[in-house]
Length: 159
Image 1 (cartoon, rainbow, N blue to C red):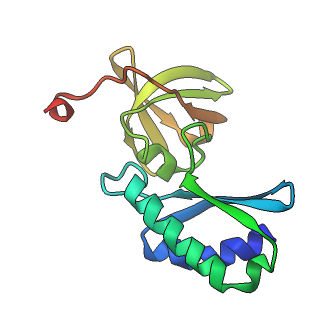
Image 2 (tube, rainbow, N blue to C red):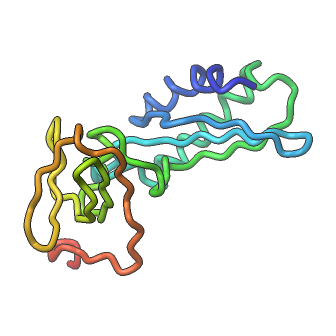
C-alpha cells in the first residue's frame, strides 16, 4: 500500500466533509498493515475537526477502501484521527485553529510561551504575561501547543 495512493483516494472524500488530510501513514503490524489518516479542518467552532466529523470521515474512508483496489488483498486496520496536539504548527491555519491555546515558540531570537489570541496572514498574536506580542511566522522555527490539564476558560465559555 502506498501512502500517495491512499491520499489520492481519500482526499476528495474528506474534502466533501469539509476536512483535509494532514498526513497518511502505513505501518507493518505482523501480517497486517495499520493505515492511519490524520485529518484537519476548521470544524464547527473553527478550532479543528469535531469527533463527529472524524467519525463520519472514518466511515466514508472505510467504505472507499473496501471498494477500492488500493489496499489489494492485504489485511489492514484503519485508524482515523485529528492531526494531534503534539504536531508542530507550520501554517497560519494551524495557529488559527489553535486560538486560545498555550503555545511554545522558538526561533533565532525567540524562545517564549504564550496564548494564541489572534492570527494574521503573516504573523501570530500571542499573549505573554498579560501583554500581546506580534510574532512574524518567518521568525518562528518551531511552534508546539502545550498540553494544559487546567486550561483557563474565557467568561463566555464558562456559561
